[in-house]
Length: 255
Image (tube, rainbow, N blue to C red; front, top):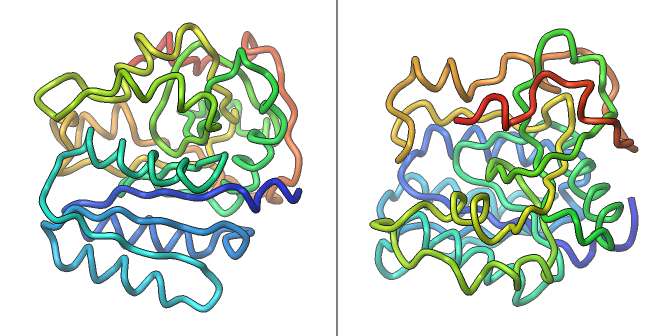
């Protein structure tokens, strides 16, 4: 790990799904190097149990975290913007999680490695820990690929990339989703970097804005093969490989 992590913050958006929130926060508390990254949680003022879980997380002795509760409900687009804006007002690099994106134990190691490795590569917009890993690709434990895509499930980026997209952010949830705007417009053909063996699990089968139900989520988002389900050592370093070796490019399996 490098000293650059001292200028990196984890931001989280939390709303009304306490069961998912608990799983994400429990997993985050167990991540390697969590003691080295501050965590800022932006809570919508709609669920006392979610707010209590965030408050309890701030009291863990090995984490530095704080929870902020909005005055009124603003919706996913605005709350996500507020979380990223807060993060980049105080740091040069942000790792972003939501209430249904469970990080694996070495997710922060992957994110920190990617933020260091690709910082000067202006062709890369973001790094994301999610990947729909095929069963015959779980052996690529340290490999990453790049794709012209954007995935919002456990991702990281830099302030200069944030500055290139923030002015085109959708104003509220009646407009298009913020991640679609990035992927289809403001990313401007830049790449996303992802591990072939997923470091993030998407558990958002219920209560989400764009998931019609648990069966659909199981078919399209849930990843049976990720770092927490595949035995093996946690990674310290990663390396990029040719994206043609994987069958799991998002362009082939959009959702």
